[in-house]
Image 1 (tube, rainbow, N blue to C red):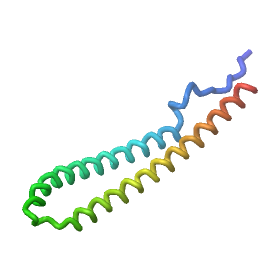
Image 2 (image 1 turned 45 degrees about the vertical axis):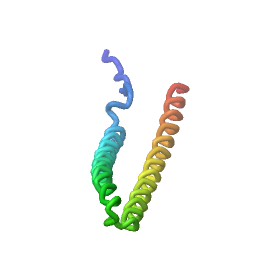
Image 3 (image 1 turned 90 degrees about the horizontal axis):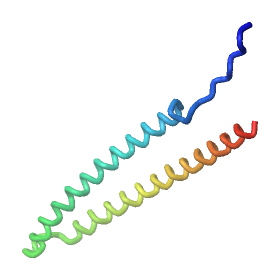
Length: 106
């Protein structure tokens, strides 16, 4: 007599397509964030060279203020995006926890 086939159970979420998609999306987001930070670092380096020009009174303080305002806006938008990602991850975590608890009860 043939043994009845056992139901396949996953060992962890390593084989989950959804997890792979989330990891890939997170990697893409982090790569873009690195590019933004590198650009920002270059601007900071240029700003130090502009500081020497300020001593010569040939720098426009309004231009510097506008640039800093734009950087602040970009940082705030990034913060909002990160919060949305974190909220989504918390929802996924709660759903996974609930599914795991239901699985153990069965």
